[in-house]
Amino acid sequence: MKFECLSISMDYCEFTCDLDRLSLENKDILTALLSEIGFESFYEENNVFKAYIQKELFNQDALQETMDSANSFIGDFPYSVQTIQSQNWNSEWEATFECAEVSDSILIRTPQYKPTKSFDYEIVIKPEMSFGSGTHETTSQILQEMSAIDFSGKTVADCGCGTGILGIFASLLGAKQVFAFDYDDCCVSNTQTNMHLNNVGNMDVQLAKLDALSGKKFDVVIANINRNILVSNMNFIANAVNSNGLVVLSGFYTEDVADIQMAAEQYGLQLQSTKSKNNWTITTFIYK
Image 1 (cartoon, one colour):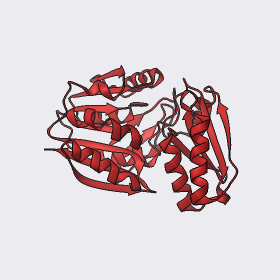
Image 2 (tube, rainbow, N blue to C red):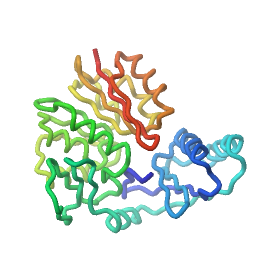
Image 3 (spheres, one colour):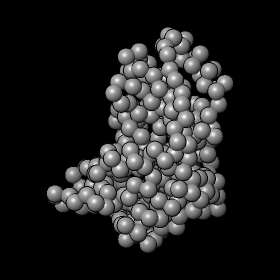
């Protein structure tokens, strides 16, 4: 499990504990519980489990209640929390990432990396922000799902765009117009940079949240966001889809699919497919 997208414009709180104390099942339980209180990215390194939340969203009392709940399932185990300064993210990204082969036809790479073989699609990502590389299971699964969708002449919404990787790929696949947005101005800036690197000129990028979809209609809506945000904002997502349009959602676990599906069906979306990798899940809905 790797980071997906942490902005360098923000400080984060880092939760850590020893993986020796956690079975695979217990790690998934802990991840789900931390997600409930706003932890958005998870990482495993040198037998240490790490979870991250924006410092401004961190609540010590909420964490204590969560850990009390976790102990009832997992048993008592030590953990620590520290603040990570924002300037640390970019250097780590640059030091560890060169490229990601999402499939035989899709390559994600930095501007400096020179591929040794050809791909149908190359998406160039400059690391102005960290971990929007396509390496995470959610992003790679969405990219693979997108490659099977006919985007020719379609309008697309990229919700929570991060580095812009999904919106850029939609454009490369033939989308007519892409509306990309994120609540973090660093993500907006980074998306604009990556648009230029990929010669994409048909993306409108804005600083906004999911309510920015209000009054707009798209043929395809894509969102790689955590379960709680998706469920609580499903009305904005569903109401932004044209008839017979698609909604591609990820950023959650297999055990969250029932909640996602229930929220989606409440607003007229019908589940078409569900795919999972390492317990991370992608769902595709159609609006009828």
